[in-house]
Length: 467
Image (tube, rainbow, N blue to C red; front, side, top):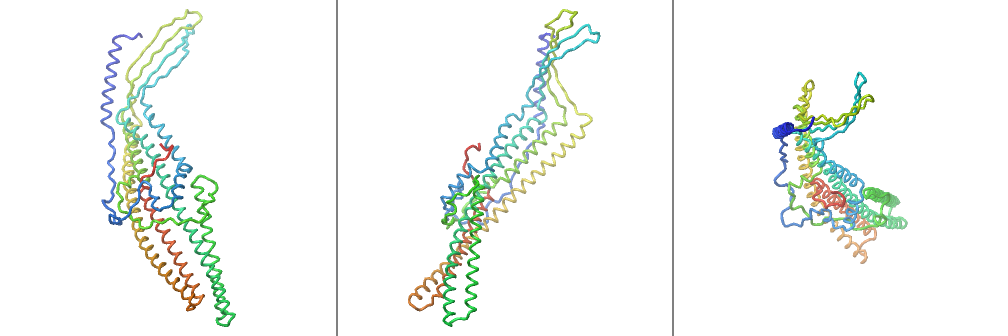
């Protein structure tokens, strides 16, 4: 059929009808739930204003360790988990602009041989079919939400990989340096025990002490020797785990060289906006899950209603029978609405929509639960950090007192007013106090890592290739 003016008018009516249906369909879209995280206005364990604070952008730098800073910078580029998450985010971002392509007009070309039953005619048919399904009743918005949720979920996964990486590297480095410091002190304790055992044996030889005292001294020396293996094992395991986090098979040799223990010093938390919790990967992932559930609900509700579209086709045919002269230029054109109405499975579609509605409510509850969990972990970490700061200060005072005692004992020994055996006992007590102080410093450092992991890692620097 040739195209004429009446077809033009019919086409305009169809287009006007499609525009009206699109407008009506948008009114049925499912509204997204309003997420109001139940976060506190203030935290219970924030220090008074005026105390030193840290840069939230690079929170690990408060530990004052340039080697740790360099490790984190390297790991953000080389860690395999971060690279995997970055690739998945790129994949989701590539697909997102095409998520609604199914609602764009599509065109099909086809050919066919049609043979007349009396075999006196045979036709070769070639044509085009076009179809445009209108994204009515909220399906357009639902599809967009579903695609956006996939991007958000991938971004949250990348964020989680980055936060975990920085926290784990910091944690492993703290434990490595602490084990090295403890190993040096245990070696000093072993040397002091060895010197003490010699002094006791000398007293036994001079009949000034019983053999039992020498036996106890040798036992203490053996215990000191056995204790040396624990930090060595910790150094080896922490260095190997650091290599895994760095994406390499072997630890760097310089990691085994003893260095200064990371130390927070006088740092205290003076501010922690509750909005920082929104950067927490678990909460961002829960928020993406809410968006996904809202998108699926919108699509399932749209499936309850008829699928309406506009279809068009044009076909040309030619008689290719041998006993007939071929004819060309004969065309058939059609244009009109296409309606797909659910009948026998309509109840199933309604049930699916109701089920998706409950899934959306569940995802909102899961989001609130994730926020509450983040608040609880943050409050616990803040409380632990403050308590461990008090403990560290007490350990520092105890260690200073024992050092003064040891210094005084050394002077008395030089003046001949004290015994060398008492001096070794004083040195052992001081080294043990140093060990306890190292443990207290490490515990506070690790609580600091836990705090910023609970807060979502604080804002991390941008990494190359993650956009």
